[in-house]
Structures are given as structure tokens and as C-alpha cells.
Length: 319
Image (tube, rainbow, N blue to C red):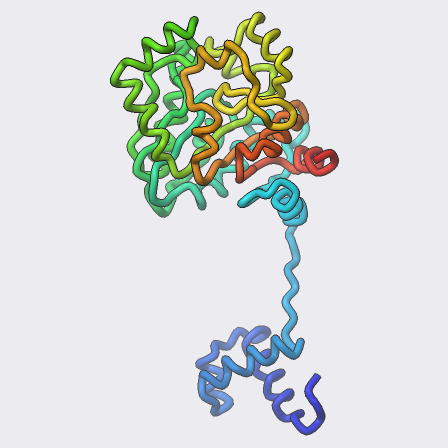
């Protein structure tokens, strides 16, 4: 606190601080009322903060998990982390997480550049269905993995793409191929098709990616689409130590890419190209995905995570 001979200044600082912070007066109103310049009022408020007369306290409301978010950012070197309340008992975890993620995505997805999106995610579809329009437009929304499959599920994949494009005022670009083909020869033939190679070339221009994170067991939406791996693939992936995937590209518990013949049949962005995208957002949660999410974080495959409180605790407990 300043010495006694400057007590008049302290009293004035306190008066100005109370008028501004407690009574809601503007700096202009305070200046007029106390016969001071507005610059003087601004300086007095700054001094009041320096002297501890004004102290700021942030009180987190219920279901805001700032401590967990900051801990995740520090532990895994993330650009951002968003932790939402876990789903109520009996609710579908994936759909609930998607809906709760929507406000954050609505606020942050817009802006210059193109957005890449993974295809077979019920969580992302739930988020897209809850999205309003972003304040800034993207140029394109591009599928980063083949979107063809079972006709019913393919319609959901296209709905995800269309909703995201509409929300971000962007042009939707689909990948006109299945996510997995029967052989590496079939994959090479498809890549030679100009309509497919054009989409694949556009992946190098993506500024943001929005993905789910898969576990070693395929999600219901992926399984229903016909793009899930078969039993032989599953055995090979498990022998290779696969813990999770992004866009059907698998990595082990340490986040290192796994090598398998399965990779040669995937019509999607590879992990190195994915990691070159500046902002990589994953929306993922649930107890069955903690290991896969942790592996993705360890490998640096994502730099923004949106998850639920229970998953956050699991990640931090054994990160």
C-alpha cells in the first residue's frame, strides 16, 4: 500500500475503482463526475490494479472445467483443450459429446482456408447437426477419407459434409471413393482417376482438420458403412500394436504409426500429411477411447482436443 502522504491518491483510486467496477459507471462518466480527464481515470484504474486495490477473481460456473483444460494443454502441449460435462446416465455418449462440442466448433471453425473432415463419425455428425453458422467463412470443406459405402450410412456421411459446409459458408468437396478398397492395386487405379486425385491434392492446402479418434474396434457407423476392417485386418493391426486411428491411419500406444498391408488399401490422408495441417481438432471421448486418444496426443497427431470430463480425468490420471 502507498505511504500515508499519498493517501489522497489512494482514496481517489479507490473511489474511481468502486464507481467503475461496482456501480458500472463508464470512464467518461467518472471523469465528468470527479472533474478529471478520462486519461487520468484510466491511469488511476491501472494504478489501482498495481496496488492491489482492484483484484480480479474468476469463478468457474458448474460444468466448466478450466483446470482440466489447462492441465491437458500443459501435459500434451495442445493449442487448446475443451472439456464438457459427461453424458447423463443412459444417454448416448458419442451423440451427447457431439452436441456439447457444437458451440465451441461454431465459435472457432470459421476463418480463412479450407477445412478437412473425417467421414465416419457419429460424434461429428451430432456436432454438425447442432451447429449454427460461423461468423467467418471457410473456402471449402473437404473429406479426408473416402465417403462411399452402404447407401444408408453414406447418406449420413454426405450429411456431415453438407452441414459443415453450410455452417462455414463453404463449398463441400466429397471424396468419391470408399474409405477402404479391396487391394493396393485397386487403390492405385482409383488414385489415377482425376476426380479423386484432385481431392487428394487439395489436402495439402487444408488449414484446419476436424476428426474423430477411433479405437481398435470399429464404431457402429464405420461398421455399418462397409468401410471397417475385416478379421484378417484386425489380427494384423493388433499384432502391429495398433491402439487407435485417425482417418483409418493407425498408430500404437506411443503414437507411432503402425505398418501393415491395411494402409495400402486406405483411400484417405496419411498421418504425415495430416500432421502438416496447422490446426487439428479431435472430438472424442468415452472410456473405451481413452487409450486411443492418449496415443493420438502422445504422437502429436492432434493439437486441439474436445472431450468430456470423465475422459479428461482418465487422460490426466495416466498421461
